[in-house]
Length: 310
DNA sequence: AAATCGAACAACCGCCACATG
DNA sequence: GCATGTGGCGGTTGTTCGATT
Image (cartoon, rainbow, N blue to C red; front, side):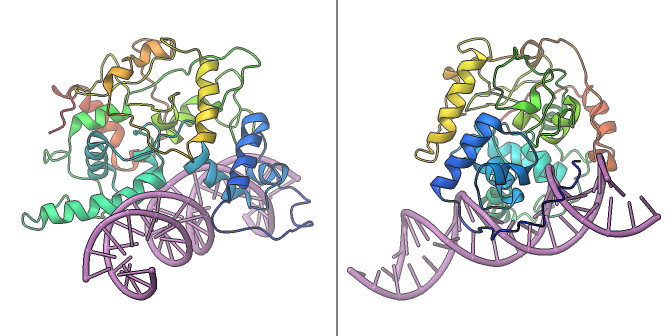
């Protein structure tokens, strides 16, 4: 972490609360995309925002970040959320990490407002144990947990795409060369940590960020992600992401996930330039209940390659 | 047209872990 | 070891907006 700023308490100004205005959004976006470095308190100050750093961070992560996908959840995403929740419980950040372009807040809201009720209705007659807010993971041995889902979640990504010098990287968590994070502490986060914290959800470029498929893990269906190298350069992606970030307040009608034809499938190994590499450095809190061990078992699970949406 | 209600979403709050002096 | 600042997370509350009456 960063050392405390001794000036922090001196010039206390009245901090705004509540909804963000478009002007505030614009300020934050511009600052983040031009010089988004430093701790969030500094960012808030330097961007000319009368907001606390925490508020800026939340606004950026949940709403302004260029790689966010907006719009309704697809049936595949819903299914995945349900599956993941059955395994992970209310660990929204970890669930979000497995849903590219989605935030924990978004998923949490979706769960609380929609899925929970739907499951409740569906299970009101069957009294399925799956309907719960329990933080406890389901019993894998009982065969309820879809192991293929877990396999999708936790397969490793080894190395991020490289950017050349002076390229702005709106997703610096992935930039192993620069190795600074949005919060601005150089080298604060190494890549495995980034992936552990941000996970796949923050690991993909493009405004759609559809779910990956690897050589080992894939989906049958509409899941794919745009290739980094296929149709656009990284700079193009960044520019598009910037534009998208500024524009998406006006039109939140992305239809990602709905059209597989728009995207090319990509293997993670290709994407990151490595094959058959398993990254095992995630300091998983999940390990609290033996998820790592679970994953070891999953790799031998016969059907874990397939994700079938009923 | 106005009032009411509920769903969906945005943002805040409190807690915790971690880094630093 | 302690105090402090910061980031991250999950729970909760507040706000907006469309549907219904």
